[in-house]
Amino acid sequence: MSAEAELTIDGTTYTLPVVEGSEGERAIDITGLRSQTGLTALDPAYGNTASCTSEITYIDGDQGILRYRGIPLEEFADNPNFVEVAWLLIFGKLPNADEYKRFSVRLTNNANLDEDMKHHFMGFPRSAPPMAILSAMISTLSCFHPQLLELHTPEEFEAAAARLISKIRTLAAYTYRHSRGLPYMYPDPQLPYISNFLHMMFSQPYQRYESNAEVRRALNLILILHADHEQNCSTSTVRMVGSSKANLFASCAAGVSALWGPLHGGANVKVIEMLEEIHNGNQTADEFINLSKDKSSGVRLMGFGHRIYKNFDPRATMLREVCDDLLAKLGIDDPLLEIAKRLEDIALNDEYFVERKLYPNVDFYSGIILRAIGIPTNMFTVLFAIGRLPGWIAHWHEQNRDPGMRISRPRQIYTGNQKSSYINIEDRK
Image (cartoon, rainbow, N blue to C red; front, side):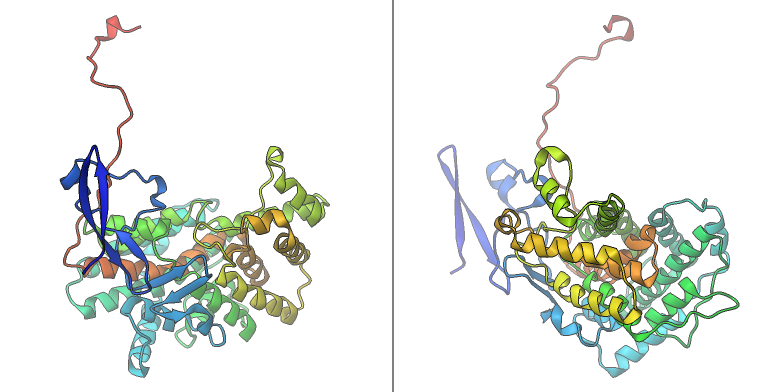
């Protein structure tokens, strides 16, 4: 017999079904709450509301667990391959040899932008925020590929997914080049996904950028670790927009705008700014930690704690090792890394932070890695968007295949004026 929950309101008891996920998560199904009781549920920021069921990503924040389609994230650490993980998230399984080759060829063949899109880049001032350009240009892609606005077959969907995943790195690289007044570098069909992106970012007409294995591994892993994180702000936005039957391009452009926020995709930028503030102010990590514990100081320790994780963020654990290895092999002596290590050491052994379960999160190390690779701070969130795109596509696709999909329409509790009368302007005080 299925489990049920009883809710008593004004002496009347109502029965609501309890649903259970494949990992034992349980939820009270309130789909019929309003029709049965006339009431709605109030849950600001949706912290206690499951907006959907999903087969894509599983998180156990208390245990520090993150799995893509059942595979623990740690299993991608030794041989990170972003393209393989993108296919896994979108299509539900690891690609076989033929699927991987077909998808890789599609990524290669779709890397170029229509030449007319360059005129759109020229219309933006060089100081334009890169995320604003990225969102606008993803929407612009729909104008150049109208045949992919309505996806009726698996073949059409795969073509659209490959086109977006391929072109977002070109859009990102062109955004960076435009901001620096540099010539655009065409994608090289001989290079794989990550190497091609780095080539478009850093090559010059007179000098080709040659990436090394450590840089490629680090960037692959960063993109993988950001590829999906269940119903976060930007993914929920993609689902919300997609629920209106908005096309894949429009839905993902909305996801970019949601990711832009400093409380979401911009968090690793705040970490770098914090570390620079400590370094430039000649503060010690200990002094900064003490200030962060004083609520009246206005100082906040960035990169620690997470809405979901009440344990060590598994992504941070993986990135710490990569960060140490990358900087050592590149011969980079970054004072910010030393500050970061000291902050981490203090916080992990300080009763104040231990009691509050404020452990380093993924943003704490990703910014230092991107900085070491040569990615400017204002491009950090763009790199986040490249990584998160497969997750957005996977959720858009999962939702659109659900025969019970309805347009998302949250309720509200009105707290404004009660009924009042219109007053002519001459009688208003």
